[in-house]
Length: 99
Image 1 (cartoon, rainbow, N blue to C red):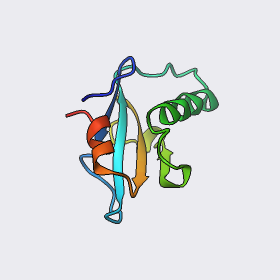
Image 2 (spheres, rainbow, N blue to C red):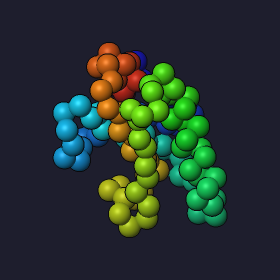
Image 3 (cartoon, helix red, strand yellow):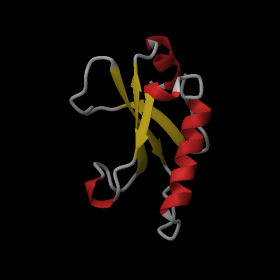
């Protein structure tokens, strides 16, 4: 099942960072870019709300999300942020990740 909110999609990271086996590295992609004038705090609030909505069943200490800003983004042309999940059920991941 593919989870979409507007134009958002959750995917496994094709090039995950070198992490321990208990960490699942996801990327949340958006087809819609935030306008440049939207301040960082507002942008971060949108991401936090997305995480709370779609990963709310996971204990806080098992989830971390972050955004690579500007020139360090791997795909600067597409709005996206990273979500790291620790010790989560594989079935949960299968349900939320796009095929």
